[in-house]
Amino acid sequence: MNRRACLWLSTLLCASLAQAGTHHGAAGKHAGGERKPRQRLEISADSLPARSRVLTLDTVVHSALESFPSLIAAARRKDMAAGEKLAAEGGFDTSVKLFTRADVVGIYQNQIVDLGIEQPTPYWGTTFFGGYRLGSGKFAIYDAKATTAEGGEFRAGLTIPLWRNRTIDRRRASLAQAELAQLIAHHEYDTVLLELQRIAAQRYWDWVLAGQRLAAARALLRIAETRDAGLRARITSGDLPAIDATDNQRAILERRERVVAAERLLEQTAIQLSLYLRTPDGEPQLPAPDDLPEGFPEPRLPERMQLGSAIDEAMSRRPELKRLEHQRKNAEIDRDLAHNQRQPAIDLTVSGAQDVGVDPLTQYYEINRSQVFLGVSVDLPVQQRVASGKIASSEANLDRIAADIQLAGDRIAAEVKDVLSALNAAIKRVQIARQHRETAVQMEEGERTRYELGDSNLMFVNQRELASGDAAILVAEAMNSFFKSMADYRYALGQLQQEDGHETRKARYD
Image 1: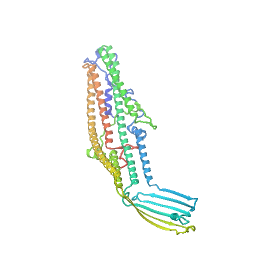
Image 2 (image 1 turned 180 degrees about the vertical axis):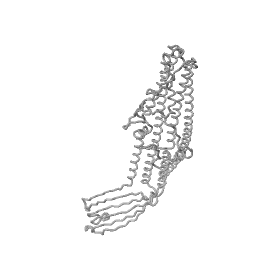
Image 3 (image 1 turned 30 degrees about the horizontal axis):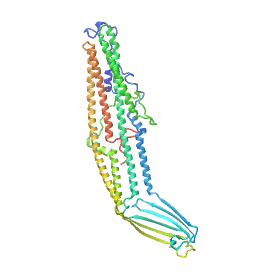
Image 4 (image 1 turned 45 degrees about the horizontal axis):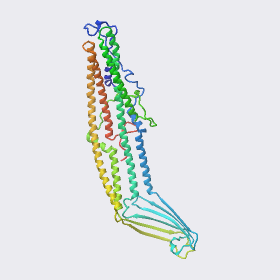
């Protein structure tokens, strides 16, 4: 803890120890009396526990990154999206078909074996196919085409869509949407990560603030308890009225109540923090009071405080906008596919076949050994209600997403403006609260001096001590507000925590 941060605690713990056995004339209220110098109470383990270890914000965040349930669920959604993409790629898997038939009874006894292979591609919807066929035995004249040479017939060809399915088809649309879904899942993961970092930081700083409240309450109690023995000695010697001891007992009871309330607040914030501080097995881990840091670090404003540049950075980083952009592309694919379905299907097929081996001796007609085929197929939709309905639906979805993008952008800009305002206000609060604390400490010391000189009473001393303690808590609250605003700042600008350090990174998926 730096000296300035320790000032309020050291002065808060300052107490005057009246010495037992001092005679009535030695009291400070007599002009000729001699007073011993005041003693200051040092910070003890009762007010600030010994720090064998200190829990840092990085430790909390990294713990949450490893085992927080909502982040694990978001990671599983990424795995699901990867599986869906693999399934979409399966639309271009090679297809192998085998057909066999044998006529074993009758005039025409024969066997047919037909093996076909089909390979769809993403290139203009082209599909390649090939195969092998063997027809042996005796065939009727109307089944003459089933006959092949003794080595069988090899064939190959391709089908090219000339209109519908040329620029887009169901296979390519499904694959493109699966790739977008994978990116959307990554951005949803980053959204959960950003929120997790923000909430974990806020819970951590609330816990630190509760520790500062407890330290202040214990310091105030220790002052009153330490003063009690000296007061009783002076009352016994007749230097002070007995009512001062009663008033100090009241102060002790009041401050004990403050300690109990502060202990409860520390336990409450520790329980809330345990949701983010987890064991490697994912179990919540309750932080101990010994894990508390000595105080807040020195506040520093971030470098990017200009509104325009901060908004630009937020717009380029925030995963919500990226997710909506990919959703828009997904809806555009639906629209393009629906327009595609309204077009006539005109497909060109080119294929060839070649028999190998000698002609069978059992046939009385010649085998057509080499063949080349050209074909065109036309499929013309008439009513087109399905495609028209899909177009209307996708256009409405695009309008909805455009409105969501505009709202998200406006909300992000508003968040950036608000957090910059909060940071500026928080740093001013810290400065003013520190000045307030210094003034309160001076007033406390002055009132205690007046009391020792007999110009004041214990009630005013108690009030000054409480005011000094409240001023110290105001400083801690201002620091808490600043660091929570810093957590909001990183969230608003979309700064993601690195897993191996303190730097921030930009979202990895665009």
